[in-house]
Length: 409
Ligand code: HGY
Ligand code: MN
Ligand code: MN
Image (cartoon, rainbow, N blue to C red; front, side, top):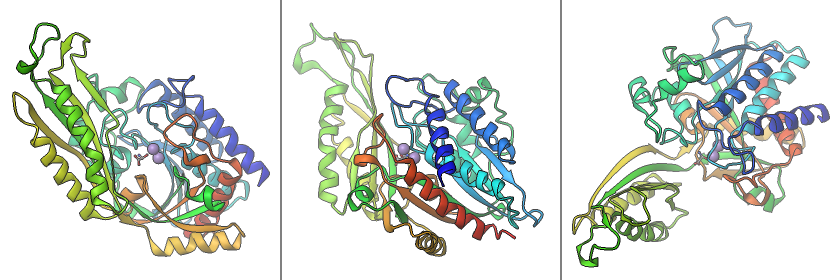
């Protein structure tokens, strides 16, 4: 396992260098220069491990090891390779690296699968550039239509297709993939929370993933001079937005059952220190293990926002994403537990408070997911760190599961 661990560490280090904020964590936006650097690295490694490389019309990368069963459905292993702004080196990347390493182990051991093995590196899971999130996997299963994809634009008004062509990607290629071409999907991911570290257990077998919604809220008022506009004649969009945002946490606390709500992104227009803001756009991220809690909070958030439509303030809410909570495949969960036990690697069952591509694939195929510990439970920040030893142990488990699912001869 030493050599495997060494390869894993070198992939993580190499990929973490492809960032637009080298002093402050990993910022790798979809279809950016940094995306292209990481893409080229991943494709080069896929070829080195004997995989046939392709990219789809969304920019997702596939590395395929053909199986003896011609046209057989593939076992996909991978994750996303985009990041949040100023994120860490492991979120998503650890799962892509796990796929690369499983392929390297198949190659090193000259394994011949009956069903193909496909390593997959997906785009825009975080939604940091085009909003919503889980774009690459939603495009593959068709829950994001080609038209919806085409209409997505970043904050500078650049469309997905324009951004793709800028780095030499062909958006005219096929996007949606038929479910019968996929036998299973496996994903390794950092936990992004404190549980495994606190329990001192290296592996979490994921049972279920929370439901989530992403809203985009627009508050409009009237611009004016900060010095000459009396306080009783203002329609200040930022004051209205601030009053709303300050009340959001109580919606989650009142809902209980682990519900959470977050405003992580906010833009002020025209954003001048001596100008009364006439427009504010902000995000609302809502999550819970139960669908009814998510739906309740969406409804209460909309009602709260609408209650501020007065005195010249106008409000609107767009639902960018809604995904029900997902339970992962019981057979694959059992397989991952059996292989952990056989390898004498301690594991526990765990639920995910983070969203993942695995929750999208679970609509069309059997999905399994394992977590490895995050130091101090930190993620979505430069301090994000996981022990390569744990990553290597997770890869061992995925390697055994992949041999089983591809029915290595
Ligand atoms: O937001 C999430 O849960 C994931 O990191 N995209
Ligand atoms: Mn993330
Ligand atoms: Mn992730």
